[in-house]
Amino acid sequence: MLPPADGFAIYRLVPPYELRQELSAEKLAASRLPHGALLVLRIADPIQAVDSACQLIPALRRRFPHVPVALQLTSLSPETLLLAERGIQLRARALFTTEAQPYPDLRFPFTHLLDPADEVLEWLTLRRVHVPASLTCVLQRIFRTAGDFATVGDLLDAAGEAESTMRASFRRAALPAPREWFRLSRALQAALQIQGHPERSLSCIAHDLRYSDQTSLIRQIRHCFGLRPDAIRGTLGWEWLLDRWVTRVAERPADPVA
Image (cartoon, rainbow, N blue to C red; front, side, top):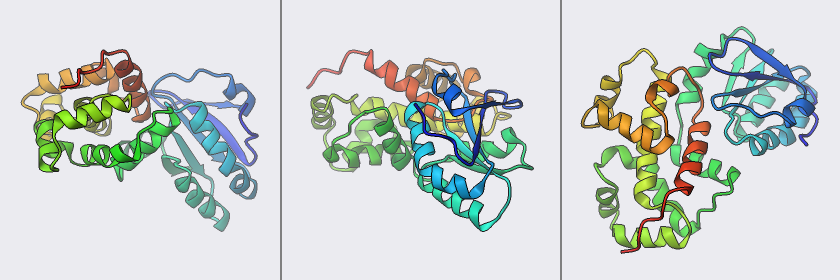
C-alpha cells in the first residue's frame, strides 16, 4: 500500500501525453502502469506536500520502478521551492509549472541524464540488482565513456583491465557480462536521442553516435530492448527501457568464463 498523498494530486500520463488521468493513492497502488507512462504529482498544499514527499516519492519509485515521477509546481512560493529541492534529492525526474505543456516541456529533462552512471546504478537498486562495490567503478566507466570506444574490450584495455578477468568477475557476481552493459549504455544513449529529437532521422542519430550505419543502431536497440526505434519515438523515460533490458538479459544464457 502506498502512503497517503497528502498535499498532492496524482496524475497518470501515457503517450502521447495529452490527457491526464487523476488517481487516488489507493487506486494507483493496485494499478498496472504501461511502459512509457509518467506519474505527475501536482501540488495541492505545499506545506503538506513537503512533509509527505519523503514517503510518497520513494514509495512510488519502488512500486513502479519502470515509471518516472515528475513534480508540477503551482506557484513559486518558498514552500514549493523547498519541495522542488526535496523532489530532486528524492529522484523526481522533472519539474514543470501549471502553464507548461507536458510533452514539449518534459522532453528535455526526461531525455538528458546529468550522470548516466549515477542514475542507472541508483535505479538498479530499485530493481534489486545488486552491484558489488568492487564492480561499481567498472560500470561507472562503461556508462560514462562507452561512446568513446568501439568495443568494451577497448574500453577495459584503456582502463588497464582484461576483458576476460572482468567477465569472470561479473559472472561470479551473477551480473550480465561487461559487453552487455556496454551494449546497454550505447543503446540507451541512442534511445534518449530518439526520444529527445523525434524529428531527426535514425541515420543522423547513428552518425552522431558513431554507429557504422543505421542498421547497426537498430540492431543494438532491438538486442537490448526488444523494440524497433519507432516504438521508442514519441515516448518519455528511460526507466521502462532499463526495465525491459533487466528482464531480457536475465533470460539469456551467461557468457562462458574464459
